[in-house]
Length: 454
Ligand SMILES: C[S@@+](CC[C@H](N)C(=O)[O-])C[C@H]1O[C@@H](n2cnc3c(N)ncnc32)[C@H](O)[C@@H]1O
Ligand code: SF4
Image (cartoon, rainbow, N blue to C red):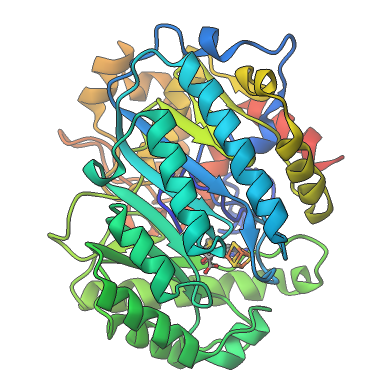
Protein backbone atom coordinates (compact mmCIF):
# COMPACT_ATOMS: atom_id res chain seq x y z
CA UNK A 1 0.00 0.00 0.00
CA UNK A 2 0.90 3.56 -0.21
CA UNK A 3 2.90 4.89 2.57
CA UNK A 4 1.45 6.64 5.11
CA UNK A 5 0.25 7.83 4.66
CA UNK A 6 2.74 5.48 4.31
CA UNK A 7 0.60 5.53 5.39
CA UNK A 8 0.33 5.38 5.64
CA UNK A 9 -2.12 8.48 4.87
CA UNK A 10 -3.44 5.77 3.04
CA UNK A 11 -6.74 4.29 3.93
CA UNK A 12 -6.13 0.75 5.05
CA UNK A 13 -7.22 -2.23 6.99
CA UNK A 14 -7.77 -2.01 10.64
CA UNK A 15 -8.97 -4.41 13.19
CA UNK A 16 -10.84 -4.39 16.45
CA UNK A 17 -11.33 -1.90 19.16
CA UNK A 18 -8.78 -0.32 21.43
CA UNK A 19 -7.91 -2.11 24.59
CA UNK A 20 -5.38 -2.07 27.36
CA UNK A 21 -2.04 -3.79 27.59
CA UNK A 22 -3.26 -6.60 29.79
CA UNK A 23 -1.48 -9.86 29.01
CA UNK A 24 -4.78 -11.43 27.89
CA UNK A 25 -5.60 -8.84 25.28
CA UNK A 26 -3.85 -10.23 22.20
CA UNK A 27 -1.34 -8.70 19.80
CA UNK A 28 -3.75 -7.79 16.97
CA UNK A 29 -6.00 -5.02 18.26
CA UNK A 30 -5.75 -2.67 15.30
CA UNK A 31 -3.46 -1.23 12.66
CA UNK A 32 -2.64 2.31 13.73
CA UNK A 33 -1.49 4.02 10.57
CA UNK A 34 -2.83 7.39 11.61
CA UNK A 35 -3.92 8.92 14.89
CA UNK A 36 -6.68 9.60 15.59
CA UNK A 37 -8.52 6.92 13.67
CA UNK A 38 -11.24 8.07 11.25
CA UNK A 39 -13.95 6.48 13.39
CA UNK A 40 -13.15 9.21 15.95
CA UNK A 41 -14.13 11.89 13.41
CA UNK A 42 -17.50 13.56 13.88
CA UNK A 43 -19.59 16.06 11.91
CA UNK A 44 -18.13 19.54 12.39
CA UNK A 45 -20.77 22.09 13.32
CA UNK A 46 -20.66 24.68 12.04
CA UNK A 47 -18.61 23.37 9.16
CA UNK A 48 -15.45 25.51 9.05
CA UNK A 49 -14.33 27.10 5.78
CA UNK A 50 -11.13 25.50 4.50
CA UNK A 51 -9.65 28.96 4.21
CA UNK A 52 -9.91 29.34 8.02
CA UNK A 53 -8.78 25.78 8.64
CA UNK A 54 -5.57 26.35 6.68
CA UNK A 55 -4.91 29.96 7.75
CA UNK A 56 -1.52 30.25 9.44
CA UNK A 57 -0.48 26.67 8.61
CA UNK A 58 3.00 26.16 7.14
CA UNK A 59 2.66 25.87 3.36
CA UNK A 60 6.22 24.97 2.46
CA UNK A 61 6.31 21.18 2.88
CA UNK A 62 2.88 19.72 2.17
CA UNK A 63 1.91 16.16 1.32
CA UNK A 64 -0.63 15.71 -1.47
CA UNK A 65 -2.80 12.59 -1.33
CA UNK A 66 -5.30 11.52 -3.98
CA UNK A 67 -7.80 8.79 -3.27
CA UNK A 68 -9.32 6.64 -6.03
CA UNK A 69 -12.05 4.48 -4.45
CA UNK A 70 -12.47 1.90 -7.21
CA UNK A 71 -11.44 -1.75 -7.60
CA UNK A 72 -12.16 -4.47 -10.12
CA UNK A 73 -12.97 -6.92 -7.31
CA UNK A 74 -13.72 -6.84 -3.61
CA UNK A 75 -11.18 -8.95 -1.73
CA UNK A 76 -12.68 -10.88 1.16
CA UNK A 77 -10.40 -9.34 3.78
CA UNK A 78 -10.42 -5.73 2.64
CA UNK A 79 -12.26 -2.98 4.48
CA UNK A 80 -10.80 -0.03 2.63
CA UNK A 81 -13.07 2.69 1.30
CA UNK A 82 -13.63 1.37 -2.22
CA UNK A 83 -16.32 0.01 -4.55
CA UNK A 84 -16.23 -2.49 -7.40
CA UNK A 85 -17.53 -2.36 -10.94
CA UNK A 86 -17.78 1.41 -11.28
CA UNK A 87 -19.01 2.17 -14.81
CA UNK A 88 -17.05 4.55 -17.04
CA UNK A 89 -19.58 7.34 -16.50
CA UNK A 90 -19.09 7.17 -12.73
CA UNK A 91 -15.31 7.37 -13.10
CA UNK A 92 -15.76 10.41 -15.37
CA UNK A 93 -18.10 12.01 -12.84
CA UNK A 94 -15.60 11.25 -10.08
CA UNK A 95 -12.82 13.01 -11.99
CA UNK A 96 -15.15 15.99 -12.59
CA UNK A 97 -15.79 16.16 -8.84
CA UNK A 98 -12.09 15.80 -8.09
CA UNK A 99 -11.53 18.80 -10.32
CA UNK A 100 -14.13 20.90 -8.45
CA UNK A 101 -12.67 19.81 -5.12
CA UNK A 102 -9.11 20.59 -6.23
CA UNK A 103 -10.18 24.13 -7.21
CA UNK A 104 -11.89 24.74 -3.89
CA UNK A 105 -8.95 23.40 -1.90
CA UNK A 106 -6.42 25.33 -3.99
CA UNK A 107 -8.35 28.54 -3.31
CA UNK A 108 -8.11 27.90 0.43
CA UNK A 109 -4.34 27.42 0.43
CA UNK A 110 -1.93 30.29 0.38
CA UNK A 111 0.91 29.46 -2.03
CA UNK A 112 1.19 25.75 -1.22
CA UNK A 113 4.42 23.90 -1.90
CA UNK A 114 4.05 20.15 -2.14
CA UNK A 115 7.14 18.10 -1.36
CA UNK A 116 5.70 14.63 -1.75
CA UNK A 117 2.61 12.97 -3.21
CA UNK A 118 0.77 9.66 -3.20
CA UNK A 119 -2.15 8.18 -5.09
CA UNK A 120 -3.91 5.38 -3.27
CA UNK A 121 -7.13 3.47 -3.17
CA UNK A 122 -8.78 1.22 -3.78
CA UNK A 123 -6.79 0.68 -6.93
CA UNK A 124 -5.80 3.88 -8.77
CA UNK A 125 -5.00 1.81 -11.88
CA UNK A 126 -8.65 0.81 -12.08
CA UNK A 127 -8.63 4.01 -14.16
CA UNK A 128 -7.72 3.57 -17.82
CA UNK A 129 -4.57 5.17 -19.23
CA UNK A 130 -6.64 8.10 -20.55
CA UNK A 131 -8.41 8.57 -17.24
CA UNK A 132 -5.08 8.49 -15.41
CA UNK A 133 -3.76 11.14 -17.80
CA UNK A 134 -6.76 13.32 -17.04
CA UNK A 135 -6.23 12.80 -13.30
CA UNK A 136 -2.58 13.88 -13.54
CA UNK A 137 -3.40 16.85 -15.77
CA UNK A 138 -6.06 18.26 -13.49
CA UNK A 139 -4.00 17.74 -10.37
CA UNK A 140 -0.92 19.45 -11.76
CA UNK A 141 -2.80 22.28 -13.41
CA UNK A 142 -5.05 23.13 -10.49
CA UNK A 143 -2.83 22.35 -7.52
CA UNK A 144 0.18 23.97 -9.16
CA UNK A 145 2.43 21.00 -8.52
CA UNK A 146 4.97 19.40 -10.82
CA UNK A 147 4.59 15.75 -9.88
CA UNK A 148 7.78 14.87 -11.78
CA UNK A 149 9.73 16.99 -9.32
CA UNK A 150 8.63 15.27 -6.10
CA UNK A 151 8.57 11.67 -4.80
CA UNK A 152 5.31 10.16 -6.05
CA UNK A 153 3.91 6.83 -4.90
CA UNK A 154 1.07 5.02 -6.71
CA UNK A 155 -0.79 1.83 -5.80
CA UNK A 156 -1.63 -0.83 -8.34
CA UNK A 157 -2.88 -4.42 -8.51
CA UNK A 158 -1.78 -7.39 -10.65
CA UNK A 159 -4.82 -7.28 -12.96
CA UNK A 160 -4.62 -3.54 -13.61
CA UNK A 161 -0.85 -3.04 -13.94
CA UNK A 162 -1.07 -2.99 -17.74
CA UNK A 163 1.70 -1.64 -19.96
CA UNK A 164 -0.28 1.41 -21.13
CA UNK A 165 -1.20 2.48 -17.58
CA UNK A 166 2.33 1.89 -16.26
CA UNK A 167 3.69 4.00 -19.12
CA UNK A 168 1.44 6.88 -18.03
CA UNK A 169 2.53 6.50 -14.39
CA UNK A 170 6.21 6.46 -15.32
CA UNK A 171 5.84 9.36 -17.76
CA UNK A 172 4.18 11.47 -15.05
CA UNK A 173 6.99 10.95 -12.56
CA UNK A 174 5.94 8.02 -10.37
CA UNK A 175 8.96 7.10 -8.25
CA UNK A 176 7.41 4.30 -6.21
CA UNK A 177 4.92 1.72 -7.31
CA UNK A 178 3.20 -0.47 -4.75
CA UNK A 179 1.44 -3.66 -5.74
CA UNK A 180 -0.77 -5.89 -3.64
CA UNK A 181 0.20 -9.52 -4.17
CA UNK A 182 -0.77 -10.97 -0.76
CA UNK A 183 0.37 -14.49 -1.65
CA UNK A 184 2.21 -16.12 -4.53
CA UNK A 185 0.17 -19.28 -3.98
CA UNK A 186 -3.13 -19.29 -5.87
CA UNK A 187 -4.90 -21.45 -3.27
CA UNK A 188 -3.95 -19.01 -0.50
CA UNK A 189 -5.12 -16.04 -2.55
CA UNK A 190 -8.41 -17.88 -3.02
CA UNK A 191 -8.63 -18.63 0.72
CA UNK A 192 -8.31 -14.89 1.34
CA UNK A 193 -11.07 -14.35 -1.23
CA UNK A 194 -8.75 -12.69 -3.68
CA UNK A 195 -9.13 -14.62 -6.90
CA UNK A 196 -5.83 -14.14 -8.69
CA UNK A 197 -3.38 -16.18 -10.71
CA UNK A 198 0.32 -16.44 -10.04
CA UNK A 199 0.99 -16.02 -13.77
CA UNK A 200 -0.85 -12.69 -13.76
CA UNK A 201 1.17 -11.54 -10.74
CA UNK A 202 4.48 -12.43 -12.37
CA UNK A 203 3.49 -10.73 -15.62
CA UNK A 204 2.56 -7.56 -13.74
CA UNK A 205 5.84 -7.55 -11.80
CA UNK A 206 7.75 -8.08 -15.04
CA UNK A 207 6.00 -5.12 -16.65
CA UNK A 208 6.69 -2.92 -13.64
CA UNK A 209 10.39 -3.75 -13.75
CA UNK A 210 10.49 -3.27 -17.53
CA UNK A 211 8.80 0.10 -17.29
CA UNK A 212 11.29 1.12 -14.63
CA UNK A 213 10.42 2.87 -11.36
CA UNK A 214 12.89 3.87 -8.66
CA UNK A 215 11.16 1.75 -6.05
CA UNK A 216 8.88 -1.27 -6.15
CA UNK A 217 6.90 -2.27 -3.07
CA UNK A 218 5.19 -5.64 -2.74
CA UNK A 219 2.41 -6.20 -0.17
CA UNK A 220 2.15 -9.68 1.33
CA UNK A 221 -0.33 -10.99 3.91
CA UNK A 222 0.26 -13.59 6.64
CA UNK A 223 -2.25 -15.47 8.75
CA UNK A 224 -4.31 -16.80 5.82
CA UNK A 225 -6.19 -20.04 6.45
CA UNK A 226 -3.90 -22.96 5.67
CA UNK A 227 -0.74 -20.84 5.41
CA UNK A 228 2.30 -22.54 6.95
CA UNK A 229 5.88 -21.41 7.58
CA UNK A 230 6.86 -23.29 4.42
CA UNK A 231 4.19 -21.69 2.24
CA UNK A 232 4.95 -18.27 3.76
CA UNK A 233 8.62 -18.75 2.93
CA UNK A 234 7.63 -19.68 -0.60
CA UNK A 235 5.80 -16.36 -1.05
CA UNK A 236 8.59 -14.38 0.60
CA UNK A 237 11.16 -15.98 -1.70
CA UNK A 238 8.99 -15.42 -4.76
CA UNK A 239 8.78 -11.74 -3.81
CA UNK A 240 12.54 -11.55 -3.16
CA UNK A 241 13.20 -12.83 -6.71
CA UNK A 242 12.08 -9.38 -7.86
CA UNK A 243 14.47 -7.63 -5.46
CA UNK A 244 11.77 -5.16 -4.42
CA UNK A 245 13.13 -2.05 -2.75
CA UNK A 246 10.36 -2.43 -0.16
CA UNK A 247 8.16 -5.20 1.17
CA UNK A 248 5.14 -4.73 3.44
CA UNK A 249 4.11 -7.73 5.53
CA UNK A 250 0.51 -7.36 6.70
CA UNK A 251 -1.05 -9.53 9.39
CA UNK A 252 -4.46 -10.55 8.10
CA UNK A 253 -7.36 -8.80 9.77
CA UNK A 254 -10.94 -9.78 9.15
CA UNK A 255 -14.04 -7.84 9.89
CA UNK A 256 -15.81 -9.04 13.00
CA UNK A 257 -18.61 -11.55 12.55
CA UNK A 258 -17.09 -13.28 9.57
CA UNK A 259 -16.82 -16.48 11.54
CA UNK A 260 -13.07 -16.41 11.70
CA UNK A 261 -13.17 -14.84 15.17
CA UNK A 262 -13.81 -18.26 16.65
CA UNK A 263 -10.15 -19.24 16.51
CA UNK A 264 -8.92 -15.99 18.00
CA UNK A 265 -6.16 -17.29 20.27
CA UNK A 266 -4.76 -19.86 17.85
CA UNK A 267 -4.89 -17.35 15.09
CA UNK A 268 -2.93 -14.80 17.16
CA UNK A 269 -0.23 -17.42 17.71
CA UNK A 270 -0.28 -18.33 14.01
CA UNK A 271 0.18 -14.70 12.96
CA UNK A 272 2.89 -14.02 15.54
CA UNK A 273 4.81 -17.08 14.42
CA UNK A 274 4.59 -16.09 10.76
CA UNK A 275 5.50 -12.48 11.61
CA UNK A 276 8.70 -13.57 13.34
CA UNK A 277 9.51 -15.94 10.50
CA UNK A 278 8.94 -13.29 7.85
CA UNK A 279 10.88 -10.63 9.75
CA UNK A 280 13.87 -12.90 10.26
CA UNK A 281 13.78 -14.06 6.66
CA UNK A 282 13.82 -10.52 5.29
CA UNK A 283 16.51 -9.38 7.75
CA UNK A 284 18.66 -12.34 6.66
CA UNK A 285 18.08 -11.29 3.03
CA UNK A 286 19.59 -7.87 3.83
CA UNK A 287 16.42 -5.83 4.39
CA UNK A 288 16.10 -3.37 7.23
CA UNK A 289 12.97 -3.10 9.31
CA UNK A 290 11.29 0.30 9.29
CA UNK A 291 8.15 -0.63 11.23
CA UNK A 292 6.24 -3.77 12.12
CA UNK A 293 4.97 -3.99 8.53
CA UNK A 294 7.60 -2.24 6.44
CA UNK A 295 10.96 -3.62 5.30
CA UNK A 296 13.35 -1.82 2.97
CA UNK A 297 16.56 -2.54 1.12
CA UNK A 298 19.19 -0.25 2.66
CA UNK A 299 20.38 2.55 0.42
CA UNK A 300 17.33 2.56 -1.81
CA UNK A 301 16.14 6.10 -1.57
CA UNK A 302 14.51 8.02 1.17
CA UNK A 303 11.98 6.58 3.54
CA UNK A 304 8.76 6.44 1.64
CA UNK A 305 6.90 5.71 4.82
CA UNK A 306 4.86 8.83 5.36
CA UNK A 307 6.78 11.13 7.59
CA UNK A 308 4.59 10.73 10.59
CA UNK A 309 5.36 14.03 12.20
CA UNK A 310 4.46 16.27 9.32
CA UNK A 311 1.13 17.94 9.88
CA UNK A 312 0.30 19.30 6.47
CA UNK A 313 -1.52 16.80 4.34
CA UNK A 314 -3.95 17.83 1.62
CA UNK A 315 -6.28 15.00 0.65
CA UNK A 316 -8.37 14.99 -2.53
CA UNK A 317 -11.04 12.42 -3.35
CA UNK A 318 -13.98 11.25 -1.36
CA UNK A 319 -12.20 8.91 1.05
CA UNK A 320 -9.13 11.11 1.56
CA UNK A 321 -8.25 12.78 4.82
CA UNK A 322 -6.51 16.10 5.26
CA UNK A 323 -4.41 17.14 8.23
CA UNK A 324 -3.54 20.52 9.63
CA UNK A 325 -1.82 20.91 12.98
CA UNK A 326 -5.12 21.47 14.79
CA UNK A 327 -7.72 19.66 12.67
CA UNK A 328 -7.89 16.33 10.87
CA UNK A 329 -10.84 16.18 8.49
CA UNK A 330 -12.35 14.38 5.55
CA UNK A 331 -15.35 14.64 3.32
CA UNK A 332 -17.16 11.64 4.73
CA UNK A 333 -16.37 8.35 6.30
CA UNK A 334 -17.89 4.91 6.13
CA UNK A 335 -17.01 1.38 7.00
CA UNK A 336 -19.91 -0.63 5.66
CA UNK A 337 -19.55 -1.54 1.98
CA UNK A 338 -23.17 -0.56 1.39
CA UNK A 339 -22.55 3.01 2.50
CA UNK A 340 -19.54 3.43 0.27
CA UNK A 341 -21.57 3.55 -2.96
CA UNK A 342 -23.95 6.12 -1.53
CA UNK A 343 -21.08 8.30 -0.35
CA UNK A 344 -19.38 8.19 -3.75
CA UNK A 345 -22.69 8.99 -5.47
CA UNK A 346 -23.13 11.99 -3.14
CA UNK A 347 -19.56 13.12 -3.66
CA UNK A 348 -19.84 13.26 -7.46
CA UNK A 349 -22.90 15.51 -7.17
CA UNK A 350 -21.40 18.09 -4.81
CA UNK A 351 -21.48 21.71 -5.91
CA UNK A 352 -18.20 23.67 -5.89
CA UNK A 353 -19.05 25.55 -2.66
CA UNK A 354 -19.61 22.25 -0.83
CA UNK A 355 -15.92 21.50 -1.30
CA UNK A 356 -14.86 24.72 0.41
CA UNK A 357 -15.73 23.49 3.92
CA UNK A 358 -14.61 20.63 6.18
CA UNK A 359 -17.41 18.16 6.93
CA UNK A 360 -16.29 15.63 9.50
CA UNK A 361 -13.16 15.71 11.58
CA UNK A 362 -11.33 15.75 14.88
CA UNK A 363 -9.76 18.76 16.57
CA UNK A 364 -6.38 18.08 18.17
CA UNK A 365 -5.59 19.95 21.36
CA UNK A 366 -1.96 20.17 22.56
CA UNK A 367 -2.32 16.90 24.48
CA UNK A 368 -3.59 15.05 21.41
CA UNK A 369 -0.78 16.48 19.28
CA UNK A 370 1.77 15.13 21.74
CA UNK A 371 0.02 11.78 21.80
CA UNK A 372 -0.05 11.59 18.01
CA UNK A 373 3.67 12.31 17.90
CA UNK A 374 4.33 9.64 20.55
CA UNK A 375 2.26 6.93 18.85
CA UNK A 376 3.48 7.54 15.33
CA UNK A 377 7.16 7.76 16.33
CA UNK A 378 7.20 4.87 18.74
CA UNK A 379 5.68 2.50 16.17
CA UNK A 380 8.65 3.11 13.86
CA UNK A 381 11.70 0.92 14.38
CA UNK A 382 13.80 4.10 14.71
CA UNK A 383 11.72 5.17 17.70
CA UNK A 384 11.14 8.59 19.20
CA UNK A 385 13.83 11.26 19.35
CA UNK A 386 13.34 12.67 22.85
CA UNK A 387 15.28 15.90 22.15
CA UNK A 388 13.16 16.60 19.05
CA UNK A 389 10.02 15.98 21.11
CA UNK A 390 11.17 18.51 23.74
CA UNK A 391 12.05 21.02 21.08
CA UNK A 392 8.65 20.67 19.45
CA UNK A 393 6.45 20.64 22.52
CA UNK A 394 8.54 22.24 25.27
CA UNK A 395 7.99 19.29 27.62
CA UNK A 396 9.63 15.89 28.16
CA UNK A 397 7.97 12.79 26.73
CA UNK A 398 8.69 10.80 29.89
CA UNK A 399 6.98 13.52 31.95
CA UNK A 400 3.99 13.63 29.63
CA UNK A 401 3.50 9.86 29.23
CA UNK A 402 5.39 8.34 32.18
CA UNK A 403 2.71 5.87 33.27
CA UNK A 404 2.04 4.59 29.76
CA UNK A 405 5.73 4.16 29.00
CA UNK A 406 6.26 2.33 32.27
CA UNK A 407 3.55 -0.16 31.34
CA UNK A 408 5.32 -0.86 28.05
CA UNK A 409 8.64 -1.30 29.84
CA UNK A 410 7.00 -3.70 32.33
CA UNK A 411 5.91 -5.91 29.43
CA UNK A 412 9.48 -5.91 28.06
CA UNK A 413 8.34 -3.91 25.01
CA UNK A 414 10.41 -0.75 25.53
CA UNK A 415 14.21 -0.46 25.45
CA UNK A 416 15.80 1.50 28.31
CA UNK A 417 15.93 5.21 27.48
CA UNK A 418 19.16 6.25 25.72
CA UNK A 419 20.55 9.54 24.45
CA UNK A 420 19.07 8.65 21.04
CA UNK A 421 15.60 8.36 22.50
CA UNK A 422 12.89 5.78 23.07
CA UNK A 423 12.55 2.60 21.04
CA UNK A 424 10.46 -0.50 21.16
CA UNK A 425 12.24 -3.81 21.68
CA UNK A 426 11.87 -6.37 18.85
CA UNK A 427 9.00 -7.94 20.81
CA UNK A 428 7.50 -4.50 21.30
CA UNK A 429 7.60 -3.95 17.54
CA UNK A 430 5.92 -7.35 17.08
CA UNK A 431 3.14 -6.05 19.35
CA UNK A 432 2.74 -2.70 17.57
CA UNK A 433 -0.94 -3.42 16.92
CA UNK A 434 -1.57 -3.77 20.67
CA UNK A 435 0.66 -0.87 21.72
CA UNK A 436 -0.82 1.68 19.30
CA UNK A 437 -4.45 1.25 20.41
CA UNK A 438 -3.38 1.13 24.08
CA UNK A 439 -1.89 4.61 23.69
CA UNK A 440 -5.11 6.19 22.41
CA UNK A 441 -6.53 8.92 24.64
CA UNK A 442 -9.72 8.28 26.62
CA UNK A 443 -11.58 10.69 24.38
CA UNK A 444 -10.53 8.98 21.14
CA UNK A 445 -11.35 5.61 22.65
CA UNK A 446 -14.85 6.75 23.62
CA UNK A 447 -15.53 8.19 20.17
CA UNK A 448 -14.31 5.02 18.46
CA UNK A 449 -16.36 2.79 20.73
CA UNK A 450 -19.47 4.88 20.15
CA UNK A 451 -18.89 4.68 16.40
CA UNK A 452 -18.41 0.94 16.40
CA UNK A 453 -21.51 0.40 18.50
CA UNK A 454 -23.72 2.00 15.84
C1 LIG B 1 -4.86 -0.47 -1.46
S1 LIG B 1 -4.39 -2.16 -1.31
C2 LIG B 1 -3.06 -2.34 -2.44
C3 LIG B 1 -3.33 -2.09 -3.91
C4 LIG B 1 -4.39 -2.89 -4.65
N1 LIG B 1 -5.70 -2.42 -4.29
C5 LIG B 1 -4.28 -4.36 -4.45
O1 LIG B 1 -4.99 -4.88 -3.59
O2 LIG B 1 -3.49 -4.99 -5.17
C6 LIG B 1 -3.72 -2.11 0.26
C7 LIG B 1 -3.06 -3.31 0.93
O3 LIG B 1 -3.53 -3.41 2.28
C8 LIG B 1 -3.45 -4.73 2.71
N2 LIG B 1 -4.71 -5.07 3.36
C9 LIG B 1 -5.94 -4.61 3.03
N3 LIG B 1 -6.86 -5.15 3.85
C10 LIG B 1 -6.21 -5.98 4.71
C11 LIG B 1 -6.61 -6.82 5.78
N4 LIG B 1 -7.89 -6.95 6.15
N5 LIG B 1 -5.66 -7.51 6.45
C12 LIG B 1 -4.37 -7.38 6.09
N6 LIG B 1 -3.94 -6.61 5.09
C13 LIG B 1 -4.84 -5.92 4.40
C14 LIG B 1 -3.19 -5.60 1.50
O4 LIG B 1 -1.89 -6.12 1.56
C15 LIG B 1 -3.33 -4.63 0.33
O5 LIG B 1 -2.41 -4.91 -0.68
S1 SF4 C 1 -8.01 -4.77 -4.81
FE1 SF4 C 1 -6.88 -3.87 -3.04
S2 SF4 C 1 -8.13 -2.13 -2.32
FE2 SF4 C 1 -9.41 -3.37 -3.72
S3 SF4 C 1 -10.58 -4.71 -2.39
FE3 SF4 C 1 -8.71 -5.85 -2.98
S4 SF4 C 1 -7.12 -5.35 -1.40
FE4 SF4 C 1 -8.83 -3.89 -1.18
